Length: 137
Picture: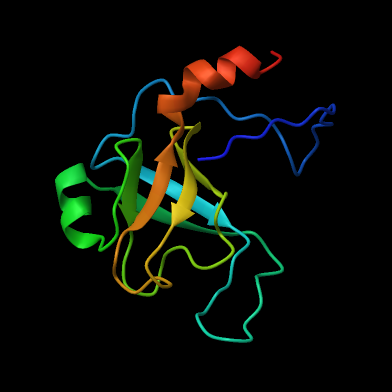
């Protein structure tokens, strides 16, 4: 995961605000919300959404995730799933996984677009020391 920090002041408003950092690692069975600006369908020539899209998901346990995702995953990653036809797609990378008002994860990758294979995210919890070291609070 590549973390970047802005060297500018963010002006909060109705469209952007702070979010709490996670107080625990992602736990299986917990519900969350994924959000992104990516494509809404797979295929050449399709464009990213003009609107922020979101969906409810459930966090899967690491064993179930590893058995269903056909790509290698890091120990700092976790999976979410909703259903076939609902999930992340190209362009959603970097989007958020929010649960209980906390930023649980950052969207990493999917195997296709919502094809029934869980989506993979980087768990923010495992980077808290780094974030707090460089974050101006």
